Length: 246
Image (cartoon, rainbow, N blue to C red; front, side):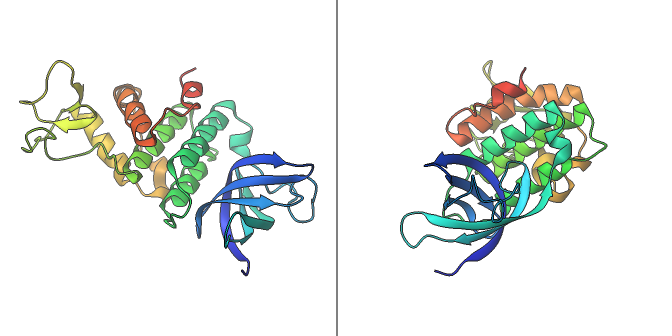
């Protein structure tokens, strides 16, 4: 099968034998794909310093006919150096890569996961990003990832009685919207401002994620709800989620 070229991020690299590696890439053209990279830990000509985390590169890929495909070479397009040189940004980016690895499946050609990760890393790498901006970006990324997985938190109708939930503050029961009549003591309520932010985050364009501002108060309301929804959507809690809470 002839080689094809794809924009790619490295999600995971596992050493194999003396100089090879099994790599898991998130690509724009092929989705997530696992490949054998012969000589990846030795050949600077074909891989150099480009086959690394938090680098965007062009990957020369031979898709599999059966078994595992092959990564022939990579060419660096961009490294996110501001992320690499800041502990909080690096921690946030590690969580994003972890969530993408858990939340995407091989064989799905959708470009949405790649575009979301690319947009989030671009925003996270910006020179002007504040500490509060890092927290907001992680939250926006999580909300959009939940929506991509089909577990969006926004809704106009009650999940119990199917009546409109109305405007303003919103309650959730078992991570689904409920109207005021169906809400009970176990329901989780968020303010009207948090609800608007939740909707805006889901609609935000992947290339403009840094444009959405989230106050500390709104983030405090949304984080527990969003982390619970993310864990359910992924089927397990990402190990990197604990790093964000420190």
